[in-house]
Length: 217
View 1 (cartoon, rainbow, N blue to C red):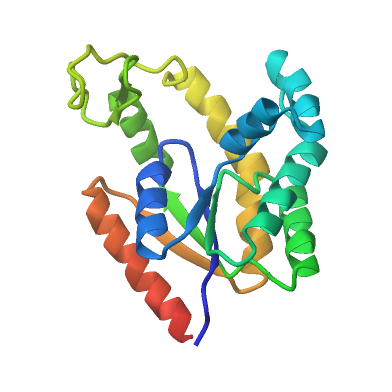
View 2 (view 1 turned 180 degrees about the horizontal axis):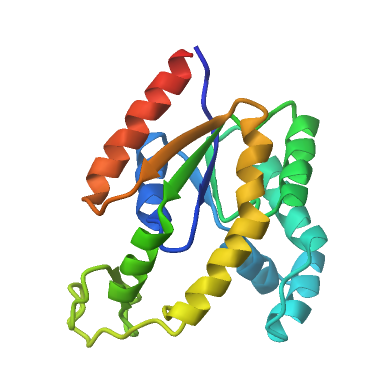
């Protein structure tokens, strides 16, 4: 029976990753790894990697792989005894290869990749309904006018429009989907196909069932 401690969650923008990330972290006692949060923490700490990252962040540029990889590698060293969930990393096959190498140095490996395969039509429909609260950051998916948490007027996110969605989808398909193939070749992918809208809890239940089968295999 497989022991699962290091998870990767892959899914397109608006695929429901945020909700399922929370489910996985809570259910399997995982520390979520957010590269954005790590970068901000390194910048705040004034570390050499943080200072390097800040140059790119201040210029609204992508932080190079070598900087992101270095920060992730240090996080893995500091948390090697803990279960972890990588969401948003690795974004490319090159990052996945580096991740595998860094884990191997620690005598570890990625244990499972949960791939949310949500149809493009469903994601676009979700995107058109999604709104965000500018006050508390709550995101909803049913077109609410007022925030259910703080009551502030909801707004449409600036990146939630057909043109921006098309670019994000293309970037995801070109750069990130190959990561799934990388780990599928290692026999580590659990794929959850979602073609119709439903409650997030139903998707969570399907993920749990698929992971249970994966552990037994």
